[in-house]
Image (cartoon, rainbow, N blue to C red; front, side):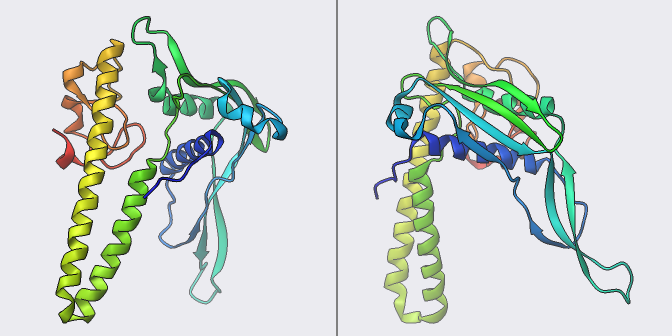
Length: 273
């Protein structure tokens, strides 16, 4: 199955979406009944080139974006009853996202692990940076600069092949459950589906292993050690652990973490050597 082609612009919008999810994960809704969770209503505009120059934007070494984030984030709408005789009313629970400086600090902390360094000179080759920030009463405006090098993306991009395979697995799993519960004479079909699921899972694991090996080889080649986000000690190559979110953590600290200390994604200890 051939992976869909995504533009550089679409990939960066995906990365900003992932960052916004991490901001939301740090917010707690102190209610029992939530009618609907709301995403942060952010907007991202590519201001590098005009619409007529869209082809140039795919090859440009520097791109600029204007990101707008609301000052207050609506966390959820909640069903509230003041007393037993009153009607249920819906109210919105909002949260102050912080100052512009807080948001910029969180931005740099999220994107820093994706910075690319030269293996010999250790010079920074590709990175994402905040060029300017304007803090208004209603929203936060951030001017973002992206420096590309050798087709490298200094931000998280979706693992398209893995996502497509996982969608196929989900579809086959639903078919398997249906057949298992409704047709005893479909054992051969169930066996075929189980075989397909196992083969696709193996492909996913092989691709993840290849990605981890490439990252580890690059880490060893750059000779520039990253700090563990837990103990803040530089990580030796033989002590480097790379969870599925592709952030770095040392072997000593990973055993004490159920989630990534940077993005809060679940750490699967069964896949860690």
